[in-house]
Image (cartoon, rainbow, N blue to C red; front, side, top):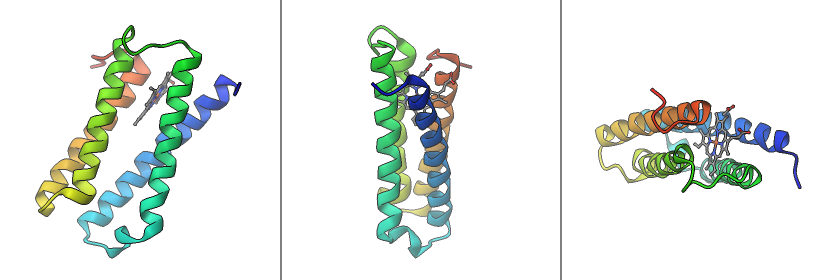
Length: 126
Ligand code: HEM
């Protein structure tokens, strides 16, 4: 079994890489850059986000945390789905630049909420 401390390091490192990559891609989107369509630009985020998800689920299993018994974890998962959906609109599906920009800001707000929920272990961390 992988040591919990290692999983947590992987989790935190992928959290940092995920948000850095998302902000960079958001900036490229707003600048109308063709870099966004490069293959590596599309594959790396999937690798990082998969590691983020796997390390999180693994830790939850190690700590025997069930989202049905721990509202903060359930809130985190729901906010993660919102972050993914808004990220899709911001970087791919949004029809106008304005739609994309609004989705980008909303996705960043979701990410901030997820971090606060994780740190305070509360679904209402404000
Ligand atoms: C964008 C997605 C995510 C972000 C930004 C995020 C962020 C964080 C942060 C900052 C911590 C550290 C909290 C602390 O030091 O006290 C943490 C811990 C944790 N995360 Fe995530 N996380 C994400 C996704 C997930 C997912 C999908 C799961 C699993 C279902 C998960 C499960 C956990 C668990 C169980 C801990 C507690 C580890 C411990 O206390 O030792 N996370 N997360």
